[in-house]
Length: 508
Image (tube, rainbow, N blue to C red; front, side, top):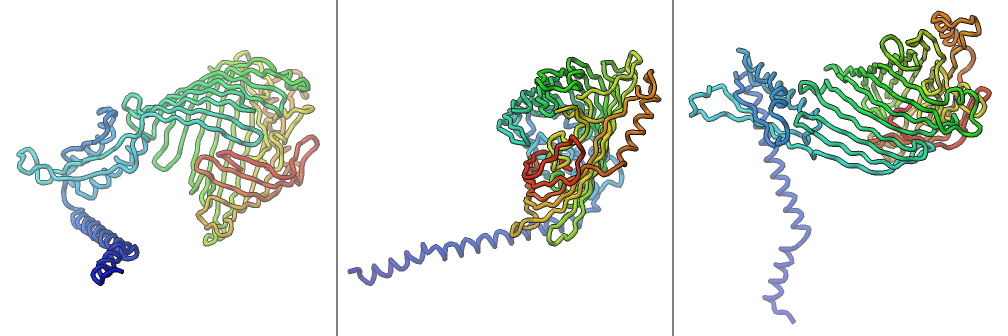
């Protein structure tokens, strides 16, 4: 039997290790620390606010932890800050704005960990070379790992693949990168590519890229396999208001091979080798709040390509233009209900090549329409002209869709999971052969045929489908599982009633 003294000691020890009391004291300490931090931030904000008009002179900018980044590269980033510093009316407010802009520019090179910390200090006033207005800027920029290796598997509509990606960063100390990709799958039999990318004059909004690729892809909807080998070079730039441009040259050797026994005469006529030499321009203006699951904003994009004409060589010659637009509008913002509409259109016009001859377009240059990422409710390449079992593609198309998005019950409006109800439609037409009018093939004949084909888009109802589904916006890609019902489709087109799965980055 314990003595009264032992009972008193036991009770005291029990009180000392009481979990509830320990948690209460821990919470009190956290509250005091948080309150002190808030007071400290408030004092700092008040101190800065009271001294915004104080004249300053930036005497030095020091970037710490950037061991593998060239001095000349960093100097170009921060030189505008030091030049602006020479103005007579330069004050603390203007200095903070310029420092923030330079640091934001540094972050966009994607070679430093985010966030980048900045500290402002006064130099030693005992130094006779300093002035009372001098300040020193210290930028703590911790470099990211100089390489990344990723491997994995992917599953999409009627395709599965395994891949490996390797990226080397900051190769020569100027935010250069080298990316290599290799994959093998059921539809894309093999794909290899390598790309070197570098900013120009330490500007993250002005970049140059050069790369090469080799791939072999099974085109099951057209009874053949396409092999590609070639390279491209791109100049990419972006304006401060967000207008993005790409100007590029591409040279590709293409081979249509591996024809199936039932391949159509159209596919057999295009079998063999061709070389495409082209320049193209891409313009993008994206004002959406999310590229994969937008709830407000708009997108406008154009892609223009010129192949084989003028100084360009190759055995295919055409002009090709695509236009895409998307708008997202919140219908009931408190409930997370939104409406997304999309429109796409494109045309391909054959041109006179180096020999002056105008050849019809080839199957590997024409548009294909239908599938889980554009016109749902149809098989892959299920719309447009066909020759027997093969989708031969078209030279002119127009497509549109409207989707109503709802958050799932109990998931909240910020959840990446959505229910959707959609309707989409489109038409894909082949260019009428100008030889039907005249024996000679002139550019004016092709132009007249293009006008007639565009007018035919408005004749009759487009092929369309409606349905409901589940959408998940993963940070890497968007996944959809939909039940679709084709409503209108033409003879030969392949609708698909029932469930289908889609994964991709761009959806109608």
